[in-house]
Image (cartoon, rainbow, N blue to C red):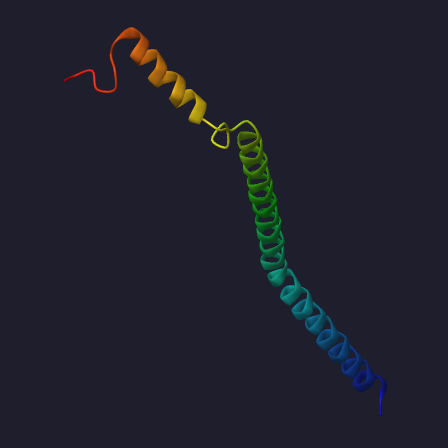
Amino acid sequence: MNAPAITIVLIAALFLISINDAYVLKRKSSNAPIEIQMYEYLQVVKQENLISQRRKQLENELLERLNEKSTSNDNNDDDYGRLLVRRKVVGLGDNPFK
């Protein structure tokens, strides 16, 4: 083989290698925006999940505080009895509209 043929083959090989590298870079760069978008989306979803978990935690704490201060479990029978006694003392009786 003579020297010009070898140089042509080498130049063609280098040209094909550079085209292949450019194609690989183009594929990687075209996938990069999708990967960035997916990463940002996952960050937003994670942040929303953390916010919803914190909101549920705060709601539960608020409900616990309300239940601790709730008077619905108290015995109100004596209050009703005192109300009837007061009505009778004042003269209203059991049915004031008779």
